[in-house]
Length: 312
Length: 94
Image (cartoon, rainbow over all chains, first blue to last red; front, side, top):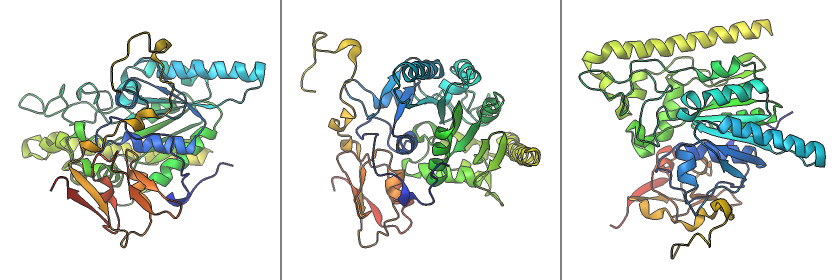
């Protein structure tokens, strides 16, 4: 049985992620990384290209106090798979205890560029944990739209103006893509719910086989939001049902933070410059579409919960 | 680093052999506003420690928290999230 915590007081004190990194003030990634290294202190980290990789390892410095490797943008999952296979051989031949291999990828490195490598690694069943920190665009290269950018968001390649009012397409559903591979555990994370986040990381790490976590990563630079409001925005994302917190444990869906009456989506949108244009009357049609996405997503989740719990 | 190294001085593959040596790089000078904790109001809930992205908040053995101004970038998440408003953001250089 995995040790689950009830309050933040029970979190381990040890800090395996060092300060002095060059991530922006108010960035959401380090909150995740600190939590992962507290939950899995024996981790070997594989990092896809992205903000986290660039800003924490500016030569000749590193913020990591655990083994860390960067390979390329597209192959974090493949690199993690290879490392895991190598550790398996070492265990077999020399009896060396295997550490947990953890891969970090941004939404660009996961949803778009790395999806093939990720799919392959999940299918081959490597014992690894893949974590996608999703800030909903290519923030590191200058806020270009990605497959994870939600409908209506303005980015530098989907700018809101006279021609289009931000991105017109829907966001991909990463958890369902992962679950379709038949993996044993997948869950969403949010920095405003640290106890929930820690418990899910511990649970994912305890599973033998591939697991995936999807993290809501506030980005003040790309979202045009106030730096001190990152956690508040993250909390609102849950309370407005924009980012439902749920898990899929052995095929059974479960909502971990139930939201009985959602707050109006506008509360979440108005805190971010990337959505500000949606509140203008001429863009109401797109706002309605976004609201419909959120509602459909939530209702689908409820159905999946009901269906999977009934059949388990 | 005081001076640039030549290729002879660098390790193979430029591997960084010292874990967590970014502590030598002080990011405190990014800050425009400084968080100040009122210890008499603090209820030791540790939320600031959890949410700090640096980490620039030290958790002492008795769960007292202290801000490390060498690294704090002054984002203000701690002040915004403090449930008892024990942290205030004060302008630097005034």
